[in-house]
Image (cartoon, rainbow, N blue to C red; front, side, top):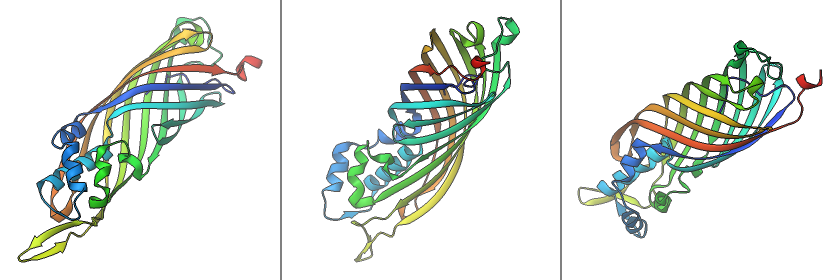
Length: 281
């Protein structure tokens, strides 16, 4: 979360990129119980019987789809659509993100005076993000695709509330920002095993698949800063979320519940482009 309480000045653009990581306690806890060697051993078999190894791998795949862990990279562009409204697009490690922010506190961006009371800003926004079934592409669990045929799609709605204090007039040298965020995730996942079997008495039966939908809330706090001059800024940021992911159905009527903390540190660069309409008056 790198927003400030002051939106992009009307008619001006911002472009930038961020490098960071997603450290989520629940997926890390699930992944530690299974090794890549065990996954390869299962994947190389012509047929697999449902057991503890498969169950643990399924739990790990779902946990990772709920909150993918690892390094992150994104680039974005923002535009001042109106005097107190800006909109943005971000591409973040395979995820497409659209958002808009409305500034309810502080002077219109581009018109602030040197007065101390013109240093505080506040804004509220809404963000949509969508990610398809390639969630596991960077994880060794994809090697189980012929066995589990795991698929997942997720959509996220985020509502941030941001306050910031300007460094210099009208964020000439940047700002310090903080706030809270509410996120709601909608997940659809499916398991359609093609080579997974169970023993029923003296017979061998193929495991039936399942498709389920689930949703869960997340609550977060964040701090960030923008430091620089001449429209070129460095952006360090840190966010932390608590998530009760809920209970998920597995194969053979098994269930698993997840909850945990996610920490998202990042460091970015931002460049302001264009004079903006306020500066042309």
